[in-house]
Amino acid sequence: MYRVKSFKIVSLFFVSFLLVISFFASVFKQSMTVFASDNIEIIACEGEKQEVQKEIIKWVDFNIDGQSLKSVLEFCKEYRGKPHSPSFAQTLSYLSIKNSNEFDKSSSLGILKKLRAYLDEGNCILDKYGDNKYFLRYQQIYHAIFDGLVGEYEMVCGTTQYGIMGYFPIAKGFDYNHYDDFGNSRSYGYKRRHLGHDFMGQVGTPIIAIEGGTVTELGWNKYGGWRIGIRSCDQKRYYYYAHLRKDRPFALDMKLGDRVEAGQVIGYLGYTGYSEKENTNLKTGSPHLHLGLQLIFDASQEKGSGEIWIDLFGICNFLTSERAVVTRDDNTKEWISQSIKVPILAK
Ligand SMILES: [Zn+2]
Image 1 (cartoon, protein in one colour):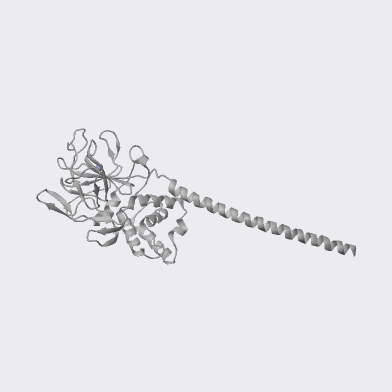
Image 2 (tube, helix red, strand yellow):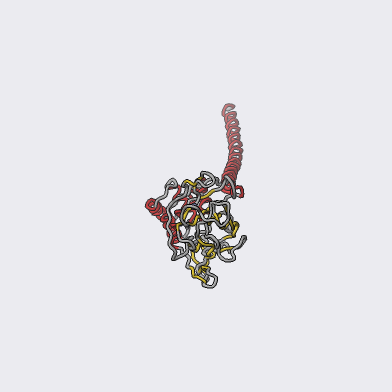
């Protein structure tokens, strides 16, 4: 009897002890879970934000061909307005991840086909890659390159469209030829790489602003001769148009600080440059436009060793459908553009 009673007391004590332990354990576990998940969430979230905001891109390997860019644009047009519709920059980033940043038109089409199936099942690119640091890096780069070239814009007639907002740099009706000459060797002044893209053409060919912005450089430069530099409205791109025509290089009344629009005539093709003396033609070589596109992620990259220039061959091929129509004013002998696009966001 004594044993039974003591057994009951011990059991009661033990059960109570277990209950108390499990109560504290559950409270402790609960608080740990909340604490841990909050912590992880905060860390992950902050980490992600920090990475997106803080990373300053220092180099860019851009090699997308024109046909792939056209295919991606058609894809984005098709999905525009649908749920989980990816942006142009997101779609390009997806391709860069899938093809290890080695583009060619046939593999791009294959990847887009798989992406179409993925989206049609109700998936979203960001579910899979929203926290992938490579994807986020590509996205940042493609936003910097294309935010002023692809998007929603308004035509002069007032209609709104989504597509290519930029223009090809050579006016419609004027002959040109070009090939991928980015990175070729140059030797005037010092040995260096060719950080731009050349268009051969006739002297006097109207040069068109690829994208709108502010004229931040205008005048003589011993390498580029008569040149004009335009900084995009979002400050991320600097377009450099060089070797312009002797005597009359720029569009009439063009001056530093002017605001220009995509499609506007800004100057005329020539072959000035490679001289300390102003208004001098190149001693060798044929008339051509030297075109450069510099990406600026941070003010420290504006001038000097941190400059990032990209290959424009693919982008120019992408823009071939966008040739600005120009007409000649016989009184001033100026060419005037009839094709202007104004990005909706930049207004
Ligand atoms: Zn050049």
